[in-house]
Amino acid sequence: MWIILAILSALCLGCYDVSKKRSLTANSVVGVLTVSVLISSVILFPMWLLSRIYPDVMQHTILYVPQVDLYTHGLIIIKSALVLSSWLCAYIALKHLPLSVVAPMQATRPMWTLMGAVFLFSEMLNGWQWAGVVCALGSVLIYSLVERKKDKQEMKGQQTYLVFLIVGILLGSASGLYDKYLMRQYDHNAVQVYYTWYQAIMMLIVAGVNRIQRERGMVQTLFSWRWEIIGISVFLVLSDFFYLLALTYPDSLIAVVATARRAGTIIPFIYGIVILKEQHPLRKVLCLSGILLGLVFLLIGTL
Image (tube, rainbow, N blue to C red):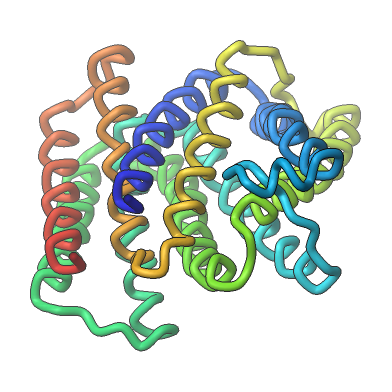
């Protein structure tokens, strides 16, 4: 059952990535992220409210949100900071890089999660898993070497945003490992609801700072409303719900869940090539094929 939940999470995650790209085009990263998190908070609020008003009824459903102590709130705040930092880096990269470049790079995230599991949870890589790591990372390396043939000035600009993307991926992997720890001890709905609310508070602070910078002329891009921002919120809430629920199963493996979620990469990748008509499709198809093959090896080796 948990692998089905992971696949559902992947599909929602793919639609979420497309919604992000459409929302961020010529738009404020901070504005989009702030509004989308606020909408997510509103979506989750009825679950929390009904759990407080009708606890006896809600306890028998998968939507029940239990109360947690101050220590647990502290742990959830750490998760909020990790996720939000990862998002900010990823959103900045996504705004300036082609979707079909970002999507394959983000597809490597399960490998870093797996590597973290090896060092933190003493899990051992088998032959299939090592083959997956080499295949996927090799594909990214080859693609990077091919891209060096571009104009140096263009590459200089891209390298700046690639750094943001890499940092975002590493922070996201750390968040995945932290999720495994949290789901062993705490309710998935409580974690999702409260970490989303804490993110909203953090983003309101960031938005306030951003507004001051804009008034001083330090920030040029203004926020404009896009209906796709609602898609960001809806698909993210659904993706996180399925993902965290999958991790609550005793036999679930974070490496498999993380790998399965990256299968949703195919949705934004196809969108970037077919709809946005991004350049050099063959190179990117080969890169993505190598990464997906690596993920298949990881999946085989982890099952």
